[in-house]
Image (cartoon, rainbow, N blue to C red; front, side, top):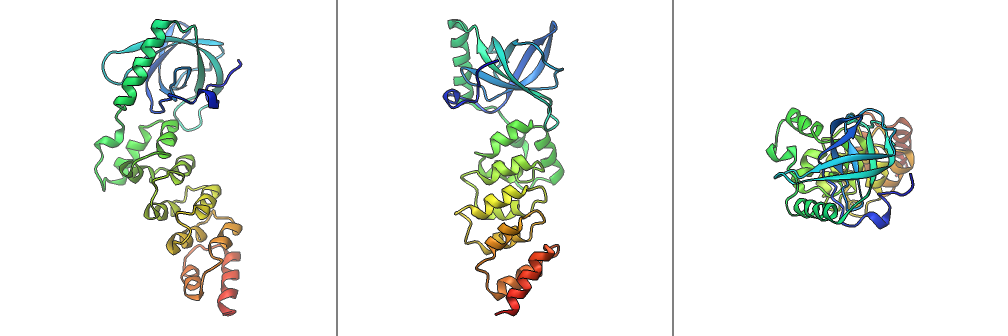
Length: 262
């Protein structure tokens, strides 16, 4: 099972939003979702049984219209269910003749021109938390992670309510993220320590006092990061942080000593 469909040489012309797909297993067609589709391979996610075959036959379907393409792929890797969406399997296309390659190119071009709709399209700003939760759960985890890294303002409004740490990690690294959004994300109890480190190190936000206080008072922040973001705090800022409930006791003691020393 050589090769890697996610290697740098295969990244060009790749479409990351999911589209309907089917694979053939033991004579049955099993519905799944195609992610990270390119001219050379695809990542499939779905509720399918353990895969032991070296190659799979599959059908990809355009989200609009009736365009389909039948392909075969060599199994590169299989990963277990990591987020409730089922296992995933990475395939490298094999046996591609000219007609199939041309049809795949048409499918890719159509998807780039008219991206698939998402469950967010029916949500309005200020939607109730339960509606946002249902919309998030309707999107497979790999797609939510991919979307977060490049999400628009409207999409970020909903994605920052996600409870999966990997989604929030990708959202923090979104180049369009604003300081106001970063402050909201920093209050999430689902953040990983590394995500807080990334927020603290981001040059876009390093001068924002409210964000630094939110990071320093987060229950999962490391002592190193907490001390880093509070290093330049004056007494009024230190007192503001000390008023935060749930502050790490060791950090609280260090900050208290700093206020008394000034």
